[in-house]
Length: 359
Ligand code: SAM
Image 1 (cartoon, protein in one colour):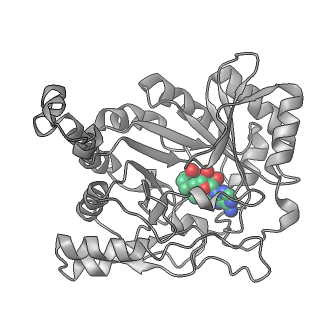
Image 2 (cartoon, protein in one colour; image 1 turned 90 degrees about the vertical axis):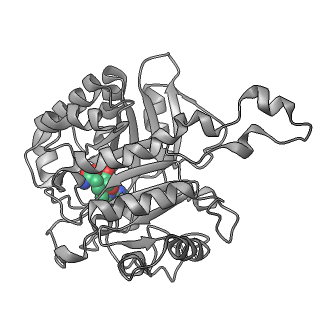
Image 3 (tube, protein in one colour; image 1 turned 90 degrees about the horizontal axis):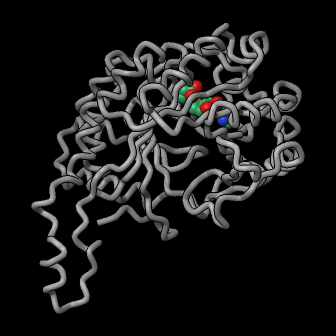
């Protein structure tokens, strides 16, 4: 039983926001730390998150990314990761999977995949890296597979201007720590904004080569809480590609993005690292979207730009059975928007900004 929406897209990727609080004040996200922050009793407990994730995985979700807000602000996040990592273990329940011998004995044309037991394949975390270094090892030990770290400038002063915190040394240390403990491949998110950090594209590309990380350039989206977004601030994927390609020739990794958000490139000279460009504004990729989101207060969002949410928390806290929760989730998935409308004249801003949704 898979989660399929009304546009025949299969949902494989769940983003779980652990908190709507953040300790950074990025000007393109949450510059003023705006209220309203969800009330504590509305935030999902670890047990509730575990229950929901288990159900989603049984419905074919293969990737879970923990995000926020800043997910590392959630106390004892390692405990949650340990719980969620158990959802990967089912893959080793070989006793329930027929052996090659058993399969070949079937006269019918039943493929091996018919016996596949749904299980989690990838447990990842997106963080600003501020409090990450001393906890990297425990996160890995708890069962985290990999980490994405946000890094919007390689210049200390500029980093502070963008994020409101003088944390560049910490964040660089986080990248090293993640690599050391094997939370790899490490991805780095940089939101490029015209006039703020677009002059650093080449420096970021060099950084990817030197540090062997997967650089992800993200177009600035109209999801900031202070509504300063303007189309002129968006640095297009085309521009990013052309500027980097001129200095470090790039080789496209595959002809299609599949369900991935990024166009991915290797360096043509064989250097380490990777460049990825995520272009929700100038080249939307909704047709291949396989994502769904759960906010920290238990609302399902079917798109970053949704103007409505679906209250799974109350369904669950109201005592719904597993079958009723599944029915609710399936009905919500069927409402997933065909596409966002950033580029249309009647674009209506999302009902919450990025840090409240979980990026
Ligand atoms: N606090 C964590 C972090 O900093 O990575 C996780 C949450 S943050 C909302 C997730 C990602 O969304 C970050 O890489 C951030 O740069 C990106 N982001 C936030 N606001 C954005 C916007 N308006 N447009 C594009 N990306 C944005």
